[in-house]
Length: 265
Image (cartoon, rainbow, N blue to C red):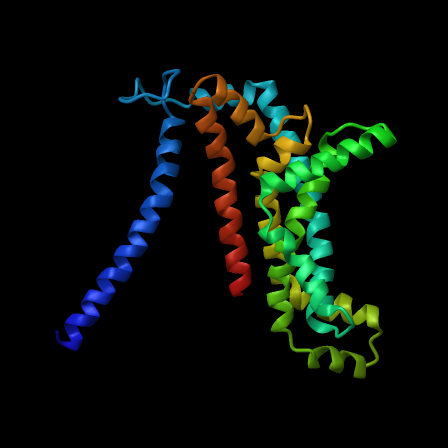
């Protein structure tokens, strides 16, 4: 086999594998989006007609809007706290040398390998014990704490990549010009790390926004979009749920594109 033919075979395998992966991931998603425009009440083929009926039903459904609001609150609070903690942890883990640094890096990354369902059960048992002592029940607050525990290591890893490539001589130059430690971090370090921080924030938001296992375990009777969809599908299929999924999916894709553009810039 000639080198030219080998190159064509390799290109065919690589591009074929890429196409297969894209088809595997996106055909179900676009099928779901298509079902959200169906006129009929059931997810069946052929369609009874094309309509925006279920989007109207979605925004008239008070339970769905409440679930949307709860998901937004949990995701926003989780994003702010997890990104802040993850950023500080990344700076400490990458730039500072201290006793127990390796142990800190290891323990900070443990939740990355921990199954969400198992983590949710462990935290639920923990909150059950504390709830009996301090007289509280599971809800939005406990769900936020669970999300922060799980998502913070992801934010830390993303920001750590930016910190690792950071040129510390820029900070030294700022100090030589008379900047205080606060001013160095405020006007030099954080702005230069901002693409990584912003990417971590978007990733944290999306992880929290669509999280099911932790929310199902820790939110109690509070409904979020994932648990609302799960409970609805358990009763019966309806184009309402593909409409919800579409409303959630499109902003998520736009956020990912925005984060990627910011990272490249």
